[in-house]
Amino acid sequence: MLFSSSIFLFLFFPLVLLIYYLPLRRFRQGQNVFLLLASLGFYAYGEPWFVLVMMGSILANYGFGLWVDRRRKREASCRLPVVLALVVNFGILFVFKYLTFTLGILNALGAAFVIPGIELPIGISFFTFQALSYVLDVCRGRGEAQRSPLKVGLYISFFPQLIAGPIVKYETVASQIDGRRETWADFSAGCARFVVGLGKKVLLANQLAVVADRAFDGGALTPGFAWLGALCYTLQIYYDFSGYSDMAIGLGKMFGFHFLENFNYPYISTSVTEFWRRWHISLSTWFRDYVYFPLGGSRVDSRARHLGNLFVVWLLTGVWHGANWTFITWGLFYFVLLVLEKFCRLGRGWPVWLRWLFTFAMVNFAWVVFRADSLAQAGEYLLAMFGLGGPGREGQALLYLRENWLVLLAAAVFSAPTAARLRDWAAARRWLILDIGYALVLGCLFLVSASFIIKGTYNPFIYFNF
Image (tube, rainbow, N blue to C red; front, side, top):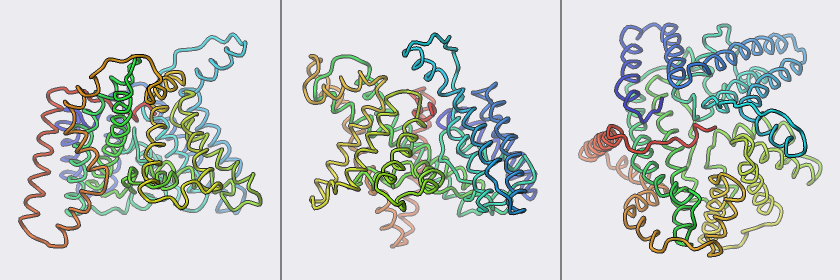
């Protein structure tokens, strides 16, 4: 079920909200059980069988959490239950996401395995990482183990962030499962955040997707259309994913949960290091806390080990996104760029505008590899951007630019902190007319977005594939 779908906006969510706040208003345990059931129903709507996989993950990690907690309180080693938790969780992920890819590689090397057709459960990477966060945070004493499997289930399956993040670490919300407080300020802020995210998704990402998909459909490209398609995809994936994160954070606030930010205007970055502090913050934080730091991070006794730690993190970052050489190459491309920045002083001393331009260009090239179906297609696309591809249809770039220039302009303007600065300016003045104007803008934004949804416009979600 998509947040940007009629059934969610006009049936599922209003019904959940009414039940949560009316008959269950003063009954926290009832609210938690109801949210768990609603979340399982939300997932089962699109994945009726795979909800059993998620329920199995919940029960397994509930058991691992109790085991780890018991050993930690006895001051015994938690290594065995943690290792088994890693094996079970990554084993499930491997079977559904990487088994066919691995068998294909082995067959290319001379084996003769029969490759099964395995459908990928939506959001399995997200809820697997959250499940592991529960076990690891209990092990580190950064959250109390839950005695009820229902509360573990709510943490792992909570529908706002279930299938496309943000990845919420257990330590962030452990105390909120029972101790959260719902306020009107949070509810209204959550509504506003949801509407903004919905507008990002429906009015910007979906429109940019039309151009990007046409550019990446495998046909011959002129340099102009190749650059336009790459730019549209760069903006599309930002508004698609950050829009979903905005909606998830907003929905969480409506129920009293506070999730950490997942995006912070990544396209204003003047280095790749800064870009990854601003892009998909929950994923980079997860790898930092649970992989990079345990390996020793940068506080190791040699540069070789530091490089090795970075290599492992970026290899895993690429693999996390999917079973394709394009994702692995994408991750390792960032590894190379970060090594050049950290150890070769790439960009040091350059003027700010040049550092921004270089970073944005590298991110663009990386998204081409990420979006392509294969490394061969990625290579052909990159060559086309520099006029080294086959002959494309002349005038195509101008045609799409003429039809979508307003969307592109809005996407470029709001990828910088333009709206945030306007909000700060308005908040400093505290004028009633500005508050009324903001409410009207949000109302119009929701109505226009809803009209696009009702009309049935193109409505993909990029990160459902992960």
